[in-house]
Length: 209
Image 1: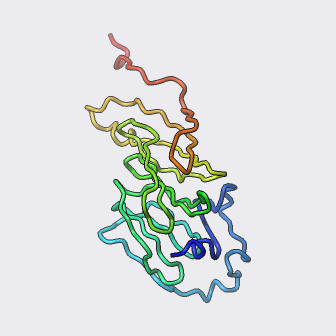
Image 2: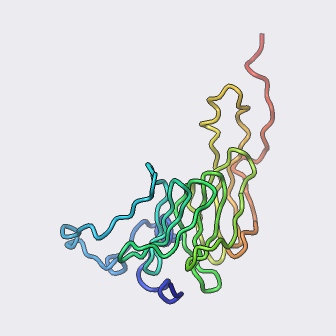
């Protein structure tokens, strides 16, 4: 696809519809009115192979739908037909929603996976621009959809400790959630803030005799 076609048409470029997180699109932008709803019919469907669940909300930008799956694959589909422009596969299940933003006038696709990595892909080709891990804790994951604003990408980091803690051998709990700002062009960390200021420390089990 040309960069011109990427910019054409209406967009839903992030989880909440934009930085204001309104989760709302006007009839003018959507090209549909309330009275059109009863007449809507399925135009196309796309199935991910060997997939039983989908946990990543698609993004629509410039006539394309960017969507990620359980197997770590991400597709750029033509919104009008469902035909695939490109696809690629990342390390783990795509766990966050998809966000699209522009870097130097070109569309980039941002998202996080269940292994705790954040990715930036070229929107026209699917080529990886950068990849980084917001937190090196082994239980870290990225479930929140990244937010793109004025050249920065804002990323939250979560963990799977609530599931791992059921194991008697797991030394729960040491993870601290965080929020960080990245340079969207490079993935370089600009700042990082933890939700809990102090690091985890070992404590005695029980109250003792």
